[in-house]
Length: 625
Image (tube, rainbow, N blue to C red; front, side, top):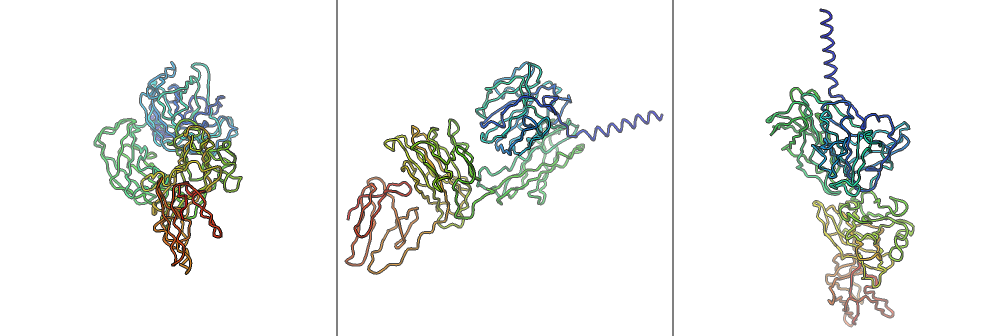
């Protein structure tokens, strides 16, 4: 009898231990056996190769220590060895899909079409892969680096279906500064293969086959219980889609739940959730499942009470699930997400300037100053798809010999070897609220060495991206082509965007037809341009009556404001300026065609009509007195 009591007590103790460990975080290295063993093989793909890529890594189901349903909660990778450090990194566009394979590792029957290899799949990460710097471990292997999945993945190795991990990296400029640890071997020895495309992150088929060659990874996982409903991810809201736009006062909060338990959640089940913003009061709501939710399935629910996320900055969203009866795992009932509303580096103090001298060294880099951006959607194929920063001439005879600022600093330029219709460099966000006459000035070197200069000519366009929106206004000044072999100042009026948040887009081209015309810029300034107040009329002196003309940056001016001034006219049109004075004083009438000239007045001075035209525009020439 006492023996029976002991056995019963032992059984109860084991049951408690198993129950308590049902949701313990477990780890599995893939391929198995390499947790503390270097694989003695390396690859730069995808973390250390500057190109958009898509990869499928296949791990045989026999690698797994537990043969039964598991829930994969995170994925880890490591540098090539314990003596190698990893730089700080931010892969802004990094998507991970996990799935059960429809093909078999053992027969190397991987389909060249990526999608055809999935029997079932789930996108488990769409957020940025950020980390580092990671110092060298000093041990036999590198330090494990987590990718931090957005949601879990249910997988059952006992089915015999292999595990596929698919990674799509779409921002090509970020690199680790270190290769990744891998393993390779003869057929049947590795229990893993890789297949990839290193030309496109949206490729539908692989171009690289790597049988018996695979990265060494680590997964964290938990075993499934009978009842376990979890908050998988907060799908809405998301960061503002642009650098400058704000989130709204009525953003919808949407959460996706996943069933990690063995028991299906029936249709018409009431589920209570709550959300809070920045630690504020909870907003609670009860939802009803529209259909059954079996193991591994998801269901999304949107709160009817909106969230105010309009304030500029980061906002923390917490979503909490009230567990169903029988669900004893509270560790996955809460999810937190941080979203950005507006720019965290909004420029609101003017004048503002950028001379490209403080953010990089050397030549040939495409790394931009803080809060600037290379457009990733302009030139997607070919070479020289981004603006380049140099201190020396990019090309003989058709680029500047030095920068404008000091003669020894950096300038930004579009190389004319790329044959690109648009290469866009985008400024930080500017809040123009409170400025009277906002304007942007910059120096440009735009020299076409072809003869004539209109042959194979490239152009720089100045666009404004305004918010809320975004709304793009193209060519706020006429396109700027060949100007000559010197730095020249250009000015663009931004007063049409008063009260808005804007970015300025420098849209260069390199598709003029040859490689004779690089375009460079330097010393960009945004300021509140306040015209001179001029002088009052002086008896005996002539008065300039401009009759509604404009000064050199496009602002309307009235009489008695100091110049210079300009007015626009199309080809063959005329412009009149009238100088009026007291009786018996001379009146000068200017008219003519669009030919730059300088008129000299002995004893008085010279009248410059367009020998160095501001903003690259044609202005009148040919003087009649």
